[in-house]
Length: 357
Ligand code: ATP
Ligand code: MG
Ligand code: FE
Image 1: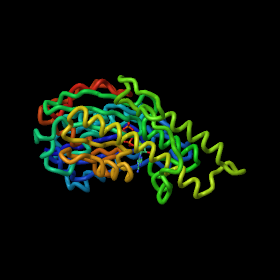
Image 2: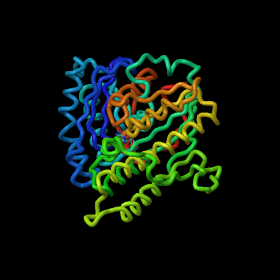
Image 3: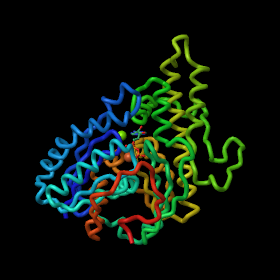
Image 4: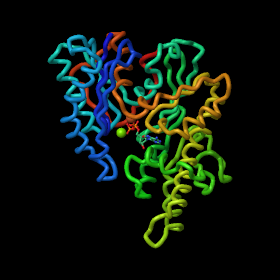
């Protein structure tokens, strides 16, 4: 079956055609980064307007690249939430219109679960179908989320924990803004950190039991990234020259150390959770999973006997292939959406993974 995916939850307008859930025939992404950069972050109303103009060309591009026409599409899957409501609304309304006008069934899907699904694209469903993969521990680490979810073969999902304040991607974005490095922060921080000494400065590792603070049991699988950002603010005040900036070598070591704190917390907590829950697979997905230092650390520290699935870089940041792939599993069960569904901003409690069980 051919599923058309549509994604507009934040600042990328994306469309993709996915065959039978895994084979990505096309994945077209138009980024609005340049439009938002001047504001130092995503402006929801601006994002909505940009989606409106970008959707038709992006859709046409995805269909053309896949070599298919709308008449051949079996179902449309669209991001319903979580995300920015004005941005989500544009994609959802567009998908509804497309579905209605062309008599194609459509389904609204969850962006967060889409990120997890992104780790299984472009490959036969071996890993998903193989009982030996479970339980599976997913770390979703993006601009809005930092969560650990334990998933059983039957699709039963348990949210082990998540951030109690900022997401990891947010910490990188805000850190980069504070250092005047630009937006989005993740990629620019990674580039700036190259060749720097990640151990020169010690940024806090909140909720890890480090710094002599005992870790409350309820926070064992939780994260906190707002303190790192505050520590950076004081660090800059302390080390900046007369112009208020950090000299180049110091900047490099600062960013490397900051990135290291984020990577260290993410990997340590995830690996501890995997050990404690007996996870057979660790999945790392979401925009921050693009990060090379994070990927290398997981590759190095994942114990033998545990499978590691890092989402391919092109499916880490927002894309519609993960939405179209996920949509296939709804098509298989003929679970489609009514035309009166609404977008939602916040992640609901995840208890079942729709493509399992
Ligand atoms: P969410 O999925 O939680 O709603 P989002 O859709 O905005 O948020 P994504 O597109 O999945 O998030 O990811 C964007 C985030 O990924 C940004 O915070 C960005 O800084 C971060 N990011 C992208 N590339 C890298 C990288 N190479 N290293 C670290 N972070 C990165
Ligand atoms: Mg984005
Ligand atoms: Fe996302």
